[in-house]
Image (tube, rainbow, N blue to C red):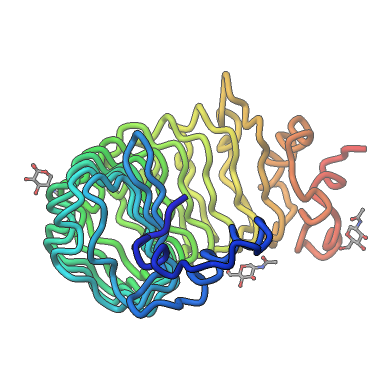
Length: 347
Ligand SMILES: *[C@@H]1O[C@H](CO)[C@@H](O)[C@H](O)[C@H]1NC(C)=O
Ligand SMILES: *[C@@H]1O[C@H](CO)[C@@H](O)[C@H](O)[C@H]1NC(C)=O
Ligand SMILES: *[C@@H]1O[C@H](CO)[C@@H](O)[C@H](O)[C@H]1NC(C)=O
């Protein structure tokens, strides 16, 4: 491993030849860690056949002289609120850019134009409330975009234009209250969509029209009150569906009609009292069979005849049921507090 700006490091020589070898090896690192030399030396460079990796922790500014073959760049834990528009001008082969845990409030619209091979962009834990339209117009190779823990309240479809290859989009832990229609219309390659821990009360019914093969959908930790008939209809390849910690009172009778490949469903901690008849019968059938389990605990189930259908299904599938002891009736009075499995007559 060589240091970013190794010249200064070497010129701090004049070491006592009698120093123990281990100490001799440690000294440059100590000097580096203490920032002994005047210019910012918070970066380390690791050259390799595939291009240099540059990692900067708590730099005072964005590194100015990056090796031309930089493939991976990490700039994290700084107070940077802005980046220079030309920050990536001299690293045309950049494949991964990790900018998490800074204080970025905005990004220059031109930032990514020089790096069309970028595959991964991580902006976790910043202060972004918006993105410039067209930011991704040259990002046709980008596969992973992480915007988790920012301050996004709204999104615009124009912000995501160009992301033809995007497979993984993480928008969790923002402040999203609504999503625009057509947001994902051109994200045909999307496999994972994470909208968890926002403030979404409703979703546009056509939200998932666009992705051809979505496999994981995270909607947990929102304020959703209903799961509509058509939201999931276009996603027959869906494997994992997370809807816990919402305010769901209704799930439409056909809401899961396309979900023949489901491996896992989490509906825990909602406000469900009942379920439409027949909803469960075909879930994950015939092949996947929700093999990784399902959770319907912490809902105020009303254990009357309307729940018979679900209860029968539960008995047959209880080996895949999470939190059985927390899946209880809230009514009618005579059954309050009983587990659904007990009511269904399972031993
Ligand atoms: C989808 O792509 C087409 C063709 O590039 C473009 O005209 C349209 O504006 C895009 N729509 C959205 C919502 O991104
Ligand atoms: C249940 O969901 C609410 C949000 O609807 C959340 O505040 C609460 O912490 C969750 N409870 C548990 C036990 O996870
Ligand atoms: C099941 O839940 C009840 C009431 O919430 C609790 O008292 C009991 O300890 C739990 N049993 C197990 C095995 O977790």
